[in-house]
Image (cartoon, rainbow, N blue to C red):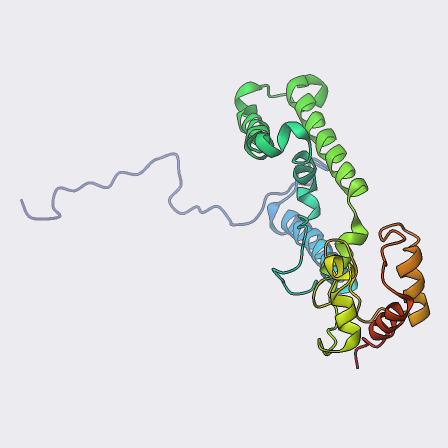
Length: 257
């Protein structure tokens, strides 16, 4: 038998060979408010909503740019702070049962249990119901998780020392000064250098002594009486008034050009 001979073409009598279905969406007018065509009705709405959020996000980035901090300096004490969406974890690690020798509990065990329960939720609750009242287990877990995250985030924000954080990350214009000058020698021999640093850059909650904008008299008053906030207590200066005058004049002169 030759190739091609004896082959039969069988068609389905239920389908007309010359009839093709037109590639047009169905008429959904008979189902008002229940369904709509994916193209272009639904997809156009999705694009419009996405465009609104994108424009809004761009406007926020222009109005409130990311805060910049000073360059990393290993010689200065710095307490890192995570972004806002990790503040609840940051607060959790402050508690005694989740920090120190129990750090693994706060960093791994508790988050692992939470995310593990989230992953197992489809297997723990197989109900087809969509109403929260009909699905008590996932609803209770979701509300408990949101409440815990909100509370921990709030506690972290309220109890954090934002003024010290601002000082730590502040971009400070450096001022050139002579370490051999009399004013610096007085500074180096006093207790001031312990908190304000060898380069007067500040640290450990103490502000920089450059570009303070204070007069010599105001600096002397702070040295004797401390600051109103109490971060620098009174009575730390134990030297002579003459040395304090020279030190105050030296600090007053530390201004950026």
